[in-house]
Image 1: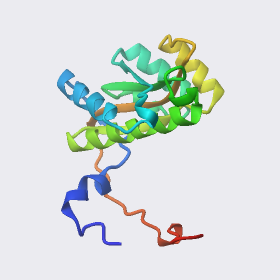
Image 2: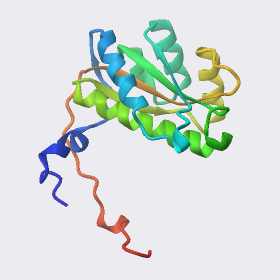
Image 3: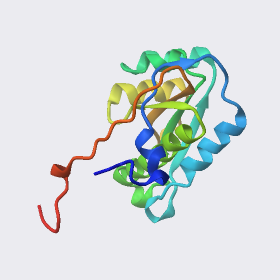
Length: 176
């Protein structure tokens, strides 16, 4: 598949996980764009169970980095966003719908970050019980709210080449 064929899709194919950040704050207008993009995601039965904890405090970012084995980039990120879902708000109170909804919101957020010139990296929290508990305590989540992931954000301090991941072996027509 030629991913270069449609220039309109370039932002999708060029998005990469950025783990190195340059110094500098991310302004509030950019954060609002990220959150608006995240909340524009589809949601099962339009329940929108997501919540977002925006973390700029350096000590809190360091605590979150310590709770996530691959989250050290949070130590130099301008901010982190903890993406959570409220199980009481999810369609049929189902964890699976909550996870799908939050994942769609995360992808929108990541694409928005790339489009507006920021670097971002998705750090998984759910389903690891120890990560869930640590993040829940660090950002003081209510009992019904589950941390799904943390997103590190900042001005990119690295430039990664786009890479195509299309694999025709993963495509099945009509049946397996």
